[in-house]
Structures are given as C-alpha cells and as structure tokens.
Length: 232
Ligand SMILES: [Zn+2]
Image (cartoon, rainbow, N blue to C red):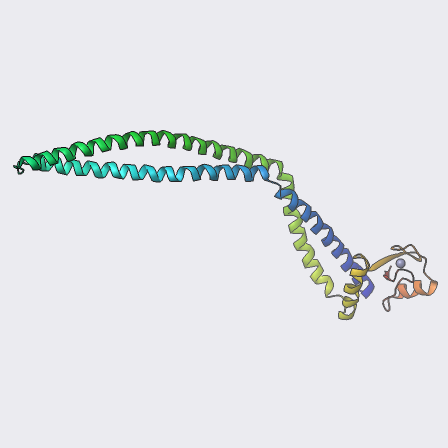
C-alpha cells in the first residue's frame, strides 16, 4: 500500500477511536448518575449503624443477668446445703440472693425495653434494604441500553486498537512522525481525500502537477492551501 493510502487508513481508524472514546465518556458520566442508589445505600448503612450498639447492649445485659443467676444459684445451693449453721452467714446469703434477684428484675425490664427498640430498628433496616433493592433494580432497568452500549463500545475499541496496531506497521517511521505532528495541528485530520483536483478538507483546487503527483503515489504530496497530505 502506498504511504498516503496507509496514512489515510490510519486516520480513519483514529477518527473512529476518537469518536468512540467520546461516546464512552458521555455514557460513563450518565451511568455515574446514580444518586438514588447511593442514597438508598447510605440509608441501609445508617440503619445498620444504629443496630450495632443496641446489639452490644443486649449482649451485656444478657451476660450480667446470666452471671447474677449463677451467683444466686450458688448462694442458694450453699444456703440449702445444710453446711451453713451460722445465722449471720445465713442472713447474709439470703440478702445476697434477694439483692441479686432484684437486680435481675431491673435488668430484665431493661432488656425487654431494649428488645422492643431492637425490633423497631431491625424493621427500619429491612425497610431500607427493600428500598435499596427496588431502587437498584429500577436503576438497572433504566440503564440497560446504556450498559449494553457501553459494553459494545468497549469491545469495538479493543478491535480498533488491534486494527491500528496493524495499520501502523504499513507506515514508515518517518511518515508516522509526520502524521503524529500534523494530527495535532489539523484537528485529527492530517490526510485529505482529493475529489478531482480539489482537496476536500479545505475545498481548494490543486494544480495539475500536484494532482499527477498524488496519482503517482511516489512520495507524500501536500495540499497547497491547508498543507494536508493528499490522497486519492
Ligand atoms: Zn487542503
């Protein structure tokens, strides 16, 4: 393939890559707009956060009640073992048992209140989780088209990258450098197709000599007006 044609082929690939990357950027921005899902996630996290200290408190209460029960049981066992003969000790044991039972009464009331609070907090969490699931499903349904378009573009960009790699091998190192430098200056279009004798990029008619030189494909020929590489 002549160099001008090879450069034109590369430009076509590059223009596609640029266009697809632009579309991908737009899609990514649109897909980032998931405020409702983020808010629903935050609500779930907040509900979980409210539950954590309640569960800790519940465990503490249950542990203390359990410990008090064991202590009272041990004292009762001792009291009714028949081994305690001293009336003062018997009285102390009875008092200890009574005070442990009273303390547990208070703790059990607290535990009951706490269980009601936990139940309400768990219901809140379930509501938040259901809301999150619904909002997520809705978001996905609304964005199905965008998600599949994004996947398709990503695949196409991979294919274009492979095509580009191959196209570049057809071009000399020197011409590649020319292309890269001109690409920046000529808005990604350093190569221009000729229509008859006209450069289609700037619309200016070229001389007969230029047209013939382009036809001969000998070397790179530039538009007299815009300076782009001409190709037929
Ligand atoms: Zn031109």
